[in-house]
Image 1 (tube, rainbow, N blue to C red):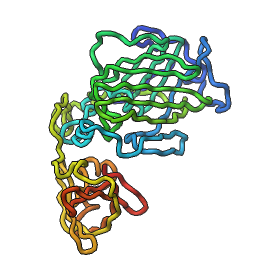
Image 2 (cartoon, rainbow, N blue to C red):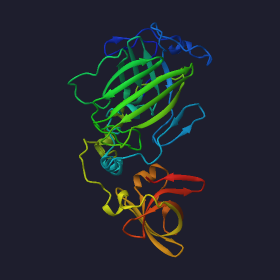
Image 3 (tube, rainbow, N blue to C red):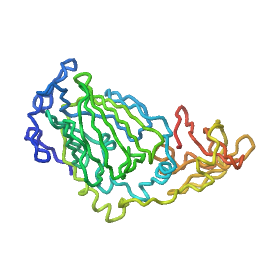
Image 4 (cartoon, rainbow, N blue to C red):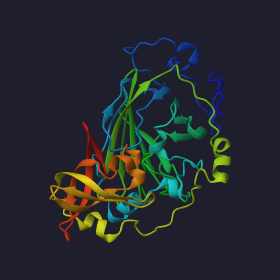
Amino acid sequence: MRIHLSLALSILVAGIALSPLSVEAQSAKTTKWDPKAPVPRLPNGKPDFSGNWTRPGTMDITRTFTNGNGTSNKGEPNPLPFTPWGQKQWDNYDPVKNGDYAGSCMPFGWIRSFTPHPMQLLQNNEYIAFLFEQSTMFQLVNTEGLPHRKDWAPTWFGDSRGHWEGDTLVIDIVNFNGYAKLGTIGHPMSEQAHLVMTFSRPEFGKLNFTWTLTDPKTYTRPIKNERVFVYTPEVELMEYACMENNMVALLDGAITPWTQPNDEPSVVPARWEWTSFDLTKSQTYTGVVKEVNWELHKLATAKIDVAGKTYDVMLGFPVRLDFRGIAEEDVAVGKTLTFQAVPSKASATDLRVETFTMGKDTIEAR
């Protein structure tokens, strides 16, 4: 159940009262606002980010797009630079089979929290509070340049400390438990991750957000993301009771309960591992599907006739293909498929798909 909250109430977070809301953050005074107005400032002169901010729906951090409301995302190109361990986590991610921690009402972690449902920021000279409507989550971050805490247990959101670089707020985060994902599609991170987020307000109605993740266990280099949030003071937070909605579904098995993951072997047989293919020889193929094997919690493979030659083709993972808009019927027997693929180093007739061409769309399979 989601019940309206009164934003006129005084808000206390972790026992620390935030300073009175800026004019633009008070719901009774936000029906009209000037996008050309000066950026509001805190008593200490730093920009005030208080207010409700609409963010781009970034379920997949490899996407780059701009929405009609002005929000945008500049993502990393696909595929991400996985280490062997990171590739295994990505290949094994199957929330239908193994459960997704969000469905079990666990904390989302920083990056995934910025996508669903409204978000309110409240700020004073010493702290910034992130109030996420999703699961009624919050994070309170000191902005005075304090050192990271010692001897704290790892957590979903990690240990966050903020400082200012001019008018840009920098939040440095370490000590993760390694369970959170970077988006709904399931890009992984580990307990070794070091996350740096920045926030700046170039104009009254926009908030620029960037993040850089350094995680040598999961990625061979730092990965980055840039987003633009848009000021939407007319939006109010509502109560979000996650377990109230999900309890029966979890007990009945309609939602698979999430449990702490094990470091299991890859679901991909050696024959179909990316390391078994020559990634320098990618080319486009068009052919007719002669046979398809769509294993729901494993792999999707097919025999495809291309100009009279039959190839064994690894199409991808059904759970990920479905997320990106490719259903089993789209690759059914008799269908003509156009796809970009790489050849096996061991067999001239084994291919692994990188992208599909569906009409005018290019759809990632990696």
